Length: 287
Image (tube, rainbow, N blue to C red; front, side, top):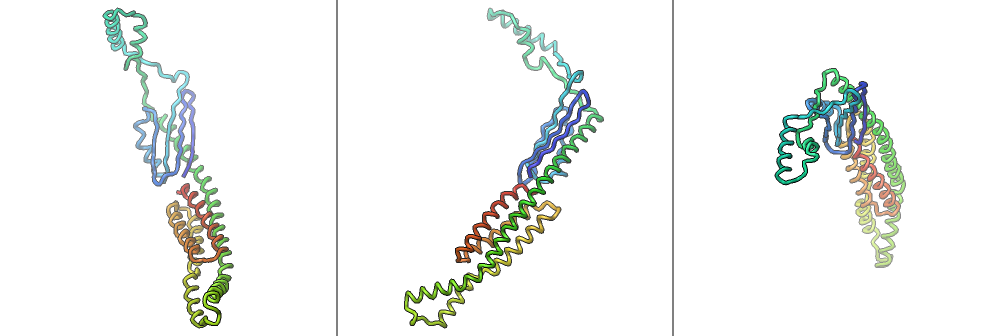
């Protein structure tokens, strides 16, 4: 959800620059920094941003740079200046202090020097609004470009999980003979081969292997991965939905790991978990 867009308009005497930046956030958090002359436009700007920007911690700033004859001269409140000056002069006399620089001191006191800001004309605002729309379009394009990169990145990560799953499917049939041999050897060492009831052994083996069966987990994991890719290709904003799907993928991977009872499969599961963590990190940038 990071984004950046900037646009500028120079009328010759005044330059307006509109800048929009955003960082990750679960909701839309909008912060505006505007000149006083644009304060009455804040609601309009907020409304437009809310329509076009779905989520993110967004900062919108409009900067006004005036040059040449457009620079506004400062005004001096002569009545207030005289009042301050007389007070300073009287205080200096009472204290026996020098009366030098009293004018400079008086000019630095509050409200003596005032800078007037003209209101923005309707024509000026229309041009600033067009500049704002251009900055917003640039912002959205930035997000779109970043989204295309993220889509490819997430697709590659999911494909890596699926590739590991394919290896798990190949390794899965090898587990039963190994488990059978291991249990049989354990019993032979413990009680001797002649004391093993083969029928009972087969019954217990079937029960034990059933507890380690990962067929459902393999099917569900593949289904979740396919659904993730399908959702990723959707034009809608599905960041939260992808987050939920990744949680389901994580559950199936964890169950595979806990039920596998096989070193090779465990290594593949670790690889899946690593890819899934990278996916979760990147999903923070998805709307």
